[in-house]
Length: 387
Ligand code: SAH
Ligand code: SF4
Image 1 (cartoon, rainbow, N blue to C red):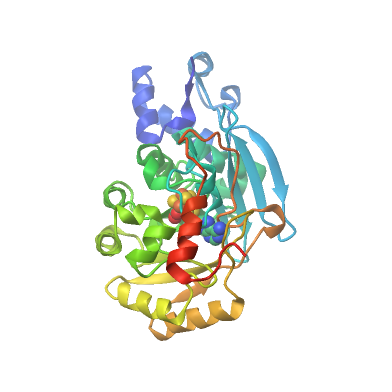
Image 2 (image 1 turned 30 degrees about the horizontal axis):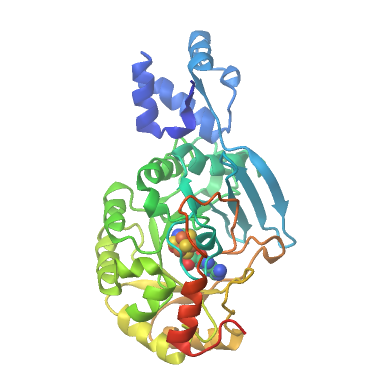
C-alpha cells in the first residue's frame, strides 16, 4: 500500500525520507511541490532526480479526499463536500471578505459532543479525520480557488501575505464539522503544515482552532502549536451550559475560564474569542449578558455573537436582531470588544452550525437530541421550543 504524503508535516516527511535513504532537503522540496504548488504528480516535480521520482511513484501518493460537490452561493461563499470514504462526507466552506478569505474546515466526520443547537452534533459521530483529510481540504480548496492563492508570495515565505502576491485563502478556521481538540493527534500536524513556510505559510494569528472546551487538550495545544483560540461559550452559567454544550458537565465554566487564562500565556494573540450563539429566549437576556461580563472578568477576550442558524427540527429560534444589538451593547459597555457574525451562504446551507455532510453514525444514539431539547424547553426558559 502506498503512503499518503499528505499525512506528514515537515518533520514527519523528513523522517519518512530518511527511512528511504533520502536527504532532508529532498523532503523540503517535495513538501513545497505538494503544498505550495498544489502538485500531486511526482513526474511534474521536475527538480527531483529521476530515481527519486520513480521511487516516490512506487511507494507514495498525494491523495486528498475527493471532491463530491462544489457550490457557489450568491454572496460568493463557496461550499465543498469531500468524500472521506464509507459513505461519509465532510464540508468545507470558503468565505471571501473585503480584506481576507477564510476557509472553514472540518476535523471529524460528525461530532460526538451533541451540542443541542448544532446540526453536526445531531448527526452523530463516525470517526476522526486523518491529517491528510484535514489538510487535504485546504489543499483541494487552494487548487479550486486558483493554486497561487497561498503560494503567491513568490517563495519569500512572507507569512502575512503582503507584498508578493494576493492570497485568496488568508485565514483558516477549524469551525466546520467536528470538535478539533477531540482529534488532537491528527490535528497538530495539519496545523503545523498551515504555518510552515514551505507549505501554506500562514501566521499563527490567522489559524484559529474553535473548541467547545476540552480543557486538557487546550493545555496540550498551548504547548504543541499555540494558534489563535476560539471557545464556544454559549451560556453564562453551568446550569444552562450543561444543557446546551454537554461537555460542560465534564469541564465546567470555572475550569474552562482557568484554561483560557493558561492558554493566553502561550497564545499568539492576547485574547481568546468567545463564540456565543444567540438563541431566542434561551441565552439572550440582558441578565445573561451581565452574567457573562462577570464570568469572563479575568480573561482577556473578545465576543463573537453568532445568530443561530436554523436547521430542520432544531427546536430553537434565532434571537431577533434588536435583541442581539442590545446584548452586544451590554458587552461593549462592559468593555469587551464584541462583533456579530454576518450570516453567509444561507442559500447553500453553508452557515455556521449548518454543516451536515454525510455521517454514518457509529455512536448508536437513541433519538438524537430529542429528549435533550424538550428537557431544555421544560427547565431553562419556560419558552416552548416546540410550538
Ligand atoms: N466543535 C467546535 C468547532 C465547530 S462548530 C466548536 O464547537 O467550537 C463552530 C461554531 O459554530 C461553534 O461556536 C458552534 O457552537 C457554532 N454553531 C453550532 N451550531 C450552530 C448553529 N446552528 N447556528 C450558529 N452557530 C452554531
Ligand atoms: Fe460538536 Fe462543535 Fe457541533 Fe458541539 S458545536 S456538536 S462540539 S461541532
